[in-house]
Image 1 (cartoon, rainbow, N blue to C red):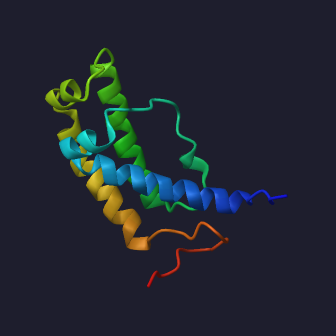
Image 2 (cartoon, helix red, strand yellow):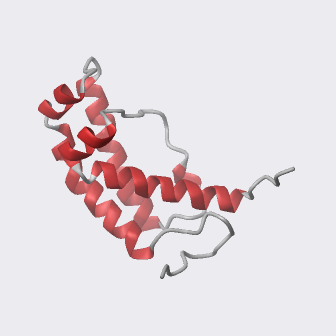
Length: 122
């Protein structure tokens, strides 16, 4: 029987997935072409994760605000090309790139054991 991961380990994995999402968003139009125009407008749980610093939360809030604005303006859009034509991917790109740079300055956490801070990869 597999042991359930700890809350901290889940937080570490979720932070890494946020970095993955920021990589796509920081790609602007190319990110949409690679991943599709899927925007989730649910309230994010990351605000309460133990793996974020206050500056990272502030940057993620900025990106999330832009995503909510994009959802509000493009709600009927179903196709990637239409979303790209709206201009939103390129408007989100700079904020996503800033958030990504900040998060990568600390790095990714391991996904197989708990860490207090990201460990260097080599």
